[in-house]
Amino acid sequence: MSDAAPQRSDALKNRQVILEVAHDALAESPDASLNSIAKRAGVGPGTLYRHFPTREALMLEVYRHDVERLVASVPGVLAAHAPLDALRRWFTTLADYVRIKHGLGEALHSAAAQEVVSASWPPVAAAVGELLDACVRSGEVRAGIDPVDVVMLLSCLWRTPGTPEGAAQAERLLELAIRGFRP
Image (tube, rainbow, N blue to C red):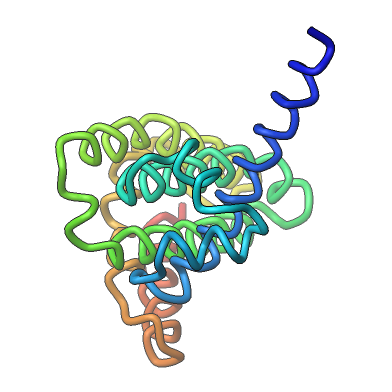
């Protein structure tokens, strides 16, 4: 019986490592193989498949994990940066995550994928609301801006190419939007 807890702990650790490695591998190449991800994670293919029986299951969990991590980062970003700068940084990171999701192509068009993506909206909107509230308190943004509208407006950020030119364009678009948020 005492062996169950270490196995469970090891399994949780393996799962976490696989998710972190898969995030990086899929960011580098949406075509990264599951075997290459398992190898980079230092686990056998069987371990990866026990946690994620299909490629889609792994991709969806990477996306869900990224969103959870990003939403949880809001207090830290606000503690480390002025509110408006925190909003900028947070949206840039969100755009990077969504770019990865878009790069996964057909894998994220299933009903299960749409369920995961739809479930991410409320926590993302709540995180944006928290960022906007901090900006309102600092006097940098006017009150009454709907967080869902901001997410929809700033969805243009993840439609820019993942190139230096695309990053410059995303920065310009973000600044245009922020001007519209001002008091």
